[in-house]
Amino acid sequence: MSANNVLPAVLMLAASGSLSVSGPSASTHAATNAAQAPVKPIVALFKATNEAAVPERLDRFANLLALRTGYSANLKEEDDDDDDPPLPRCGTITGSPGGWDDSRQDC
Amino acid sequence: MHAAIITIKQDLHALAVKTAFAGRHGWTCDVIEVDSLADTGSLNWSPDNGRAHGTLPARGGGRVDVSSLDVVWWRRFALGDDIALPKDVSDPTAIDVISGDTRMSAMGVMLCDFHGAWVSHPDATRRAENKLVQLRAAQEAGFRIPKTLVSQDPVRIRAFANELGGSVVLKSLTNTNYAALTATIVNSEALACDRALRLSPAIYQEVIPGTRHLRVHCFGEEFHAALITCEQLDWRYNLASATIETFALPSQIKAAILKVMDTLQLRMGVFDLKITPDEEIVWFEVNPQGQFLFIEGLSDMKLTEAMTDFLVREAQERRAAARS
Image (cartoon, rainbow over all chains, first blue to last red):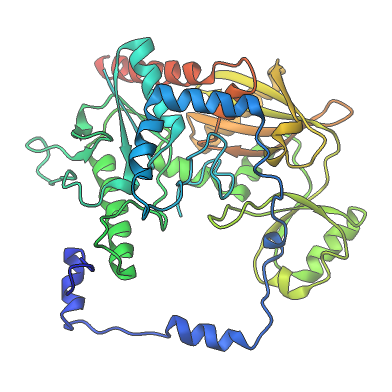
């Protein structure tokens, strides 16, 4: 095992080769579908085009709140690292940069 | 008294309420970021009840003995692809295992060792998220709900749209991390592709006319209603052109909302309703853990304070009930 690929303890059994379970690979699946035109569910055809249009008043409120709550300080620590993922869900007060997260409990 | 907020990393709602807890009540409020548990070494649990209580890591360091908590705000419990991980963990299977085992153990610690007030219980929260369950509960509570079809049957969908004059509102049953999907009015042309309709069920609804939308925050038995005036169908992505002001909710609507809350066993909920041109209030949905800071930021409504005070009341009532 390389130093760049740490596994949780429960995976050690599989990693050692004692457990071998296989199924259709993702690449096979992709190849099968490659010949077909991409089709999307109808709801995926309608995406918000102006999600970034946040009122200035809301921006000011969010920035002030971020300062007061320690949110900004934590963000700054994360920003020091270029490898960090983009802001997570609930990173904004309306939801997230990627969409409106209004309750979702389970991803 | 001791409160905790179960959520995911960098949740501004949680941090705002934590800050209000300290400022308004002098309470300790820990934020537990369930997607940041990997490599903390702080989750512990044993079935030996009474000898060792389950612990979870708090944001900023330290461990929370969950048996010591008086109230828990169950805000988010979604562990997606973006869980916080050490840099030397990259294997997709490893990440999936970490996510799954973290979810299962954190949930288990809370279900076994937390004995305070839930806002709201995870089982109720999860069930109430389901749009079909919500619509049934709203209908039974006496709300007018839009004529609705949830379907992936192209024939049924097109027939439903024809019955409603050719146009229907199209909505997803959930969100995706990868795009901001919006509710849209679609016509027969958009409903022509069988594959797109069959691929996945969606919600098709009657178009409710009007520009006055209600966002009702129900904390226990307390209501904070905002009137959002917006020309667009989906105001969420059009806040810049919307106006927001407080709204006095009619008593019969309050009663119906409380009935829905009771049916769904929720202690809080954020409700989306719409006022028709003839002043009828129509149900759209409930968000069991809906966002509210954007309303506070665009109005004079003090929702963070209201939410914090509500959590305090829940804890006090729970403690009083335990004593009696």
